[in-house]
Amino acid sequence: MKILVIAPTPFFADRGTHIRILEESLALEKRGHEITIATYHIGRDISSDVKTNIDVRRIRRLLFWYKKLEAGPDWQKIFLDIMLIRKAFYLARTQKPDIIHGHLHEGVLIGWIVKSALFWRKMKLVADFHGSLTKEMVSHSYLSGGILKKLFFTIEKFVDNLGDSALTSSEENTKDITNIRTDHNVTTVLDGVNLDCYENLPDKVQLKQEFELPLDKIIITYAGALIFNKGIEYLMDAIPKVLEQNKNVFFVVAGFPVEDVEEFVRLNKLSENVRIISPLNYFDLPKLLKASDIGVDPKDSTTLQASGKILQYMGAGLPVVCYDRANNRTYLGEGGQYSKDISARGLAESILALVGEPQKMMLKGQLNEQQIKKFSWDISAKKIEEIYIK
Image (cartoon, rainbow, N blue to C red; front, side):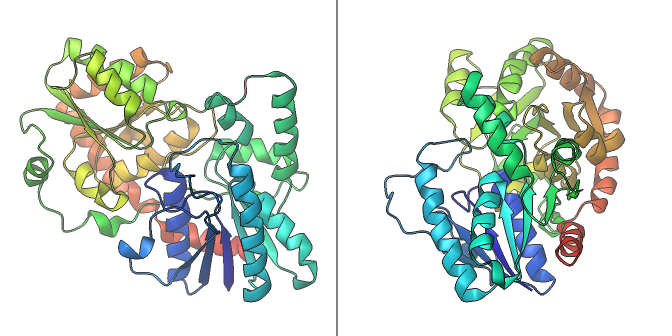
């Protein structure tokens, strides 16, 4: 099939939303489909990192000053999305795709506009929701309450009902959208991991030396966006609490934007205990995780987003410290060290509990290395393909 993917984001950047878009597209291409991605004017060229025939088509650079790569709302995206409508309409008219696959609420809305304008083409629109639009805007402090929040929630409910089929990346989001959609046609398609990337890597000691990490300490790593709605504030506040009770640990914080984390480390005099890596190329992530001993994910369930980073930790055979969320349980099972208390203290206590039991660390890592075989992008692509042909 010909698939037009609408990605209203600066694709590609090294963060979860982009990883899902990329890996889904690569896995669908592997199954024989022809993929075109319509996206913003900025973002890294994926052909420099991976061999693919995916055709990435960008809007014109009229907003040449817009260079924001990190997640979060921005009023200028309204103009970028209007331009993306034009680009998607042109591609749908000329390439005649069988499927329009819209990512995020904006991508779904753009796909619906294009499909409606070209209604005689009988294209199928598949809505790929990564979380709650309104809750994400609240988490980024773009909305607080009142009339504006109600307006965006009304828009979100409208978009939630668009598409011939809908899929989400988490059980929590599926439950939420199923209650909103009149057809209740929502499928959970979990993120995956490319296990080939974790094979034939140097041993842990060599990788620790490559990243200049201490050989005599337990390396605890967070890799992902360094923004509020990913729970980074819980982790940063937990680090001093952990170090107060155990000096035999070293933290790696990898991602972007980095300014707030750098300021926190400086003010709290943590530079000897925390390594900041920014930016971290997604394709270098396996080496960093193989150099680590524990993965940590402090994301709560506020935005209903899944956590692809947990799967990467599992791919590296790491035990994972996280909050007790349904989606995390689905991924990890007994391989997780869960904090039921969503707080910095709860996270710190879970880290300390795991660090204090080396045998448990090893066992949970081994469990995750086995469990991850159930989660691959090939499995996700097959599930998406079934949605396409329903």
